[in-house]
Image 1 (spheres, helix red, strand yellow):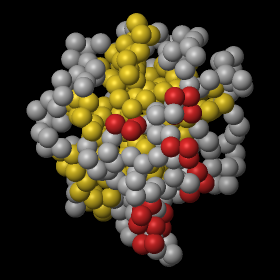
Image 2 (tube, rainbow, N blue to C red):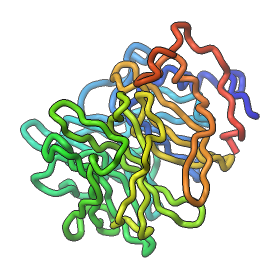
Image 3 (cartoon, one colour):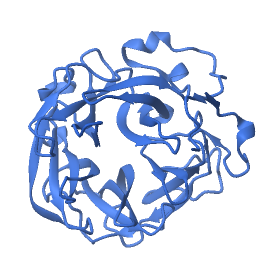
Image 4 (cartoon, helix red, strand yellow):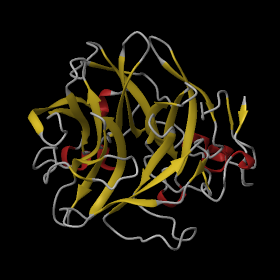
Length: 342
């Protein structure tokens, strides 16, 4: 057991504790080059870091040696002459071909939200657009693009076609060029929100799809984590399994949520100590959103939660478990089964 206390790091370099990090849709990159963890946000905590420039059209990067203590936000992308200044949502950083690709959704006034790839030689940026135009289809309202490489090494963008435009939200995929700059061929609809028995309707009966993320279990089974709203109430996430082992499916939905206490938009990564982790945000209330980090167990057929390590559920748990939230702040020292520093 590793206790991640404040005396294990330089707090001048990493002053931002995970219980204070305000973040939506956290994606964590475990960078094998720097042996550091990175996550990306679209807004800066001006109360804590008043010197950091704020406003539309920016992404910030946070760095951590241990997943608990994070650096102050540093700008890694600024709009400049880029086409969009709105809805910088759910940034993800993937390593592809030796470079770092920041994938996110963007929007300009009067236009639809679309997904696009930015590239840099460093996880800290600066990032720049791979190509001038987005890769999701023209005329579609989209969000939450993620990268998937098939068994032939071909890159795909998996993304959500939003329920606001199609009522029953879709998760779709489109092949990309090798530089991740353009779509190749037409998009494929993989499944819809109401295909999953665990999802519940929102206002008007529509079904939400959020935050797809692909992962292969031991033995090669392909699963996709994704988020919606559960029948029990609250933001929730679960996963689907590809019966063909590839992105085109068909996809079989899990019967129940994997987590349903107003926390979702999840992804998976391995620590430098070899532990599989799941990250998501909780609660689904913008100003209170914090990272939840779960230690995970994977088998050839399924994924299970072992333990949540940040303690951010303690005060912010929601959904059907909201009445169990504590009023006093959590003071427990975060503990990992394996040292995340490796």
